[in-house]
Every structure is written in C-alpha cells, then in structure tokens.
Amino acid sequence: MKAIVQRVLTASVTVGDRCTGSIGKGMCVLLGIAVDDTEKELDWMANKLVKLRIFDHPTSGKPWDADLLQCNYGILVVSQFTLQCVLKGNKPDFHNAMKSEESQEMYNKFVALLKSKISDPNLVQEGEFGAFMQVHIQNDGPVTIPLESPESLKNTKQRKEPGQQKQRQNKRKDLKSVETEQNSNEKDTELLQAETNNLNLAEVVPGS
Image (cartoon, rainbow, N blue to C red; front, side):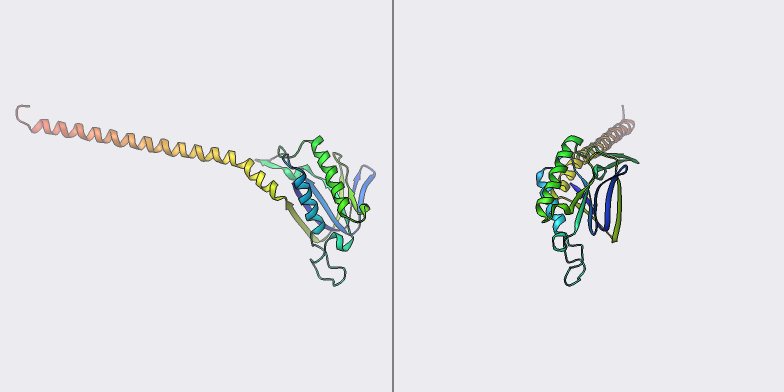
C-alpha cells in the first residue's frame, strides 16, 4: 500500500459540479492499494497517518511536533490506483494495482478505520471511488511525504525477484557457454600442436 501525504491549508474533491469532500487545515492523502494488500496494510497505514507529526504543536508552536489527533485537523482521502504504476519504457502499467471491485471494498474499510481512530468522524472526508475527480489542494509548505507499508515493500521486492533471478540465470548460462567455447578452442590448439610435433618428428627420423 502506498500513499502520498500532503499537508494542506484547504483541500477538496469535485466530481463534475458536485463536491464530494472538503477540509480546511489538515492533510490530503492519495491512496494506492496494491494487488496483494491485506487488512494488515490498512491498519499500518491508518495508524501511520493519524500519528504522522507534520504540524506545528498547538500549544508550543514547535514545528513537526503534532499529529492530526493533537491538532483536531481534517483528512481528505482520495483513491489513487496510479500510485501502483510501473513504467514499461515510457508507458505506465498498472498490473500491481488491486482490481476495482476488491479495491473499493478495501478503500471503504480504510475510510471506516480512519473514522474509528478520530474523535470526530466528520473530519474524515473523501473523494468518490472510481469517478473522474478534480482534486484541489493548497499545499502548506509545501510538504509532501510518500509512505509505503513495510509488507508492500517486501511484496514489491518479491515480485521483482523472479525476473532478476531469470536474468542472473541467463548470465550464468552465457558465461558457461563462453567457458565451454574457450575450453574447446584450447583443446583444438593442443591437438593441432601435437599433430605438428608428430610431423616434425617424422621428418627427422631416418627411414621414415
């Protein structure tokens, strides 16, 4: 699971002429759900977001010292499957993103989980899953922080490894082929040298 967190002064989402969600000061979160994400990733990401200290402390004013819960700020969540993009040359590929129906169920669980962690559920606003949205933000700072769950990082590495392993195997085959060819050439050279020595010997032996 991946997320792009932006600290904002205001943020809103519209679909056509309709506003689906808006907040004042707080964070806008673009959420990308991967094909192998589970509720474990949902819980990790929700906990990380509500405890992320990217705001000034409400009492001391100390920067980078307060989270959403301490400040009572809003959070706007927008589903963003393109965060799971993998480039193939210059073309984006989204095979790592969870399929729409399953992803919507995960997304709804994630929003419900956030609401359970924040005292005022109205502070949790959202876009509209699967819709063509316009996301309007006034980034404060600017502050933009990428997040990825530990399990997602491990799964990404595992998805890459089969291809890398195949490349290593092909490389070993190529090296072995080169070594075999070199050994063959060395044997041919030895045979040729032996034949040459035999011919020279035959020329100097009387009666041959």
